[in-house]
Length: 397
Image 1 (cartoon, rainbow, N blue to C red):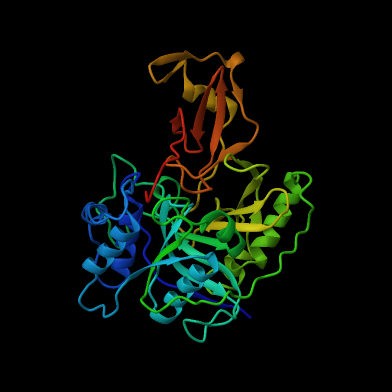
Image 2: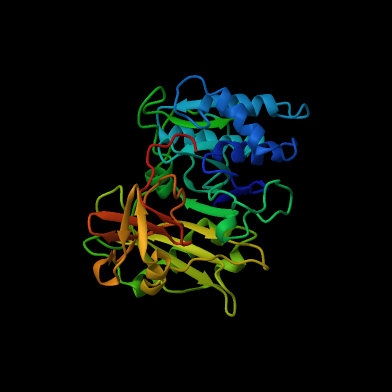
């Protein structure tokens, strides 16, 4: 029997492409009683006090300073930046902060690209103390502040019950990440610079565990020699969902056992060799999408889920047709100072969607159509936004 704890942390989007640290600070500070502090002010605090190393939007030192500077007087604890040498150590530090202090940590993911809030966990047993590493970690519940709030349009300002997290361009308030996905895709460590090789999170002040914890045995149903067909992918997406922590979550288990899969959509990771995943929309009879479930497209491993618990809202995920892409591109596209004519007979639309962490998408549920026009490449995000390149040098955005 697993132990699930999921804190009631309000979800709020980041107000700009680079306000992830501000949005995470806003969410956690609101959780501990500070109210809805403006993201502009929080970002200025983060950025101004990110002094250890240049290049960060919200640096680890700056975000930690903001959390302690802005915490309410009623909050007797304080925040510490943990710089661990292993993913295991930082992950268990995150678990302890949620379990013992009842506060959501803020973690650095995708190398050094992005901050997210870790609001809950699914583990095999409650930790005995901060040094306990005997339990298994099954997964995490997170608030990813991406995508940015639409501009122009609300919000800001942010408030309880605002439109943040309601789906589509307003983000999704609920995500569950399997621990294997957390290890390989999210908590991957800072690649270089002052924090090179470190795994970072802003947590409570208790020490991090020093002993390596128990590891779950990896059992794969397929050998990975070929990409699964869609029918098989849909079946394993449903199996993975119902075997995941979501099926044991008090507020979600009924939903999980009522949904049925739609057509899986294949996505290729651009930054990895031979790495593909499926996104399968799932819904109850007579409703739009309730969940988006991701599995590995070669091995069928369950990866993560984006879901809604609001009866009034649903998720959106609809790849574009060739006709829609051509209509969006129009007759010409400007790349730098060059104007590229569009001839339907002379463009190539890549057969799968593609994704990698970048400024244009910091969620694997927001992939791109990739279009080649001669020597040029365009990326059309699933919401229709068109980019002539993907921005990769990003730190804390």
